[in-house]
Length: 117
Image (cartoon, rainbow, N blue to C red):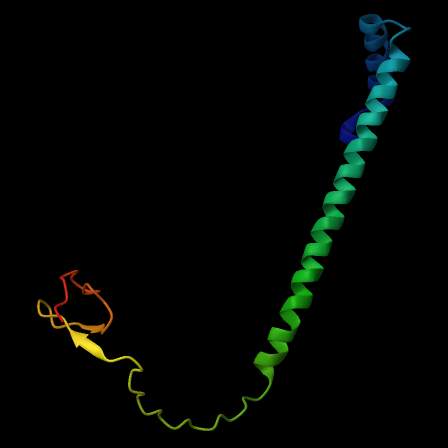
């Protein structure tokens, strides 16, 4: 028997339960205990299935990464440097901090000083 409980122990537990709860409430308590155990089993089953689903989803999403990592690297052609493009709007230097600002700005974007035109 589980937990080292012998049949005499079970009989003693039933007798004590009969004395404490009485014969009329014992079936009601048994039903409640049975329902509780069934709900517990359902919850454990759902939790274990959810855990298995998460593990399977994680393994599935990790497989392409592992396959790509094991594949031979593809050579990449060198890229020529791009020449800097001149700004479309003319820039104005701030008289206070010499920062470049768009010509339509009234105040410096760096220090906030008023730009003179």
